[in-house]
Image 1 (cartoon, helix red, strand yellow):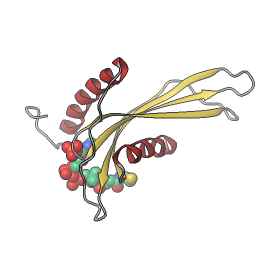
Image 2 (cartoon, protein in one colour):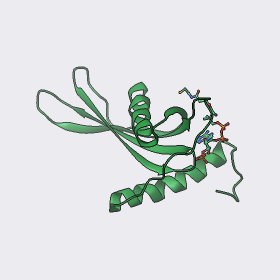
Image 3 (cartoon, protein in one colour):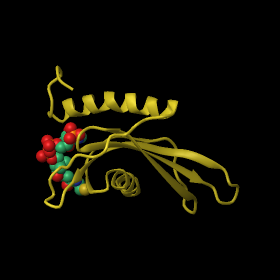
Image 4 (tube, protein in one colour):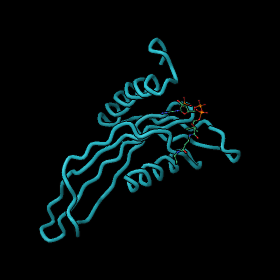
Length: 128
Ligand SMILES: CC(C)(COP(=O)(O)OP(=O)(O)OC[C@H]1O[C@@H](n2cnc3c(N)ncnc32)[C@H](O)[C@@H]1OP(=O)(O)O)[C@@H](O)C(=O)NCCC(=O)NCCS
């Protein structure tokens, strides 16, 4: 879980050009176990940007180094907030989805953002 957080933070920092803080991890699914001695590969994508926050999806694949077989083991969605030098939230550039996959991730992330902000008590059900 720590690696997922670090990987997501790197993607968010690269996108925003600022230090970031983890605001929430709202979805973490363990699909298969990772066995001792296997190689772990983490990939992150910035799916959606609000004003100062970014949703980052992280996918974890594990590889059996003896056979080369790779498995999807976990996925998570995290929200990072970019901070200025005074540790206040600062606006970040938008994401501009190009491919069909990026467009799907963007739309799905938009829906998740609404749901998580309602859960966090940040907005009412009537607002996004
Ligand atoms: C995350 C944090 C900076 C937000 O500060 P805040 O005073 O609530 O700021 P705002 O209300 O202006 O919200 C800033 C952004 O965070 C988002 N946000 C706030 N709480 C959130 C939550 N629980 N989940 C997802 N996003 C959240 C807001 O939607 C907003 O995004 P937007 O600008 O894209 O619309 C603040 O709550 C914080 O510092 N939390 C502790 C973080 C921490 O210690 N993390 C663990 C260690 S890394």
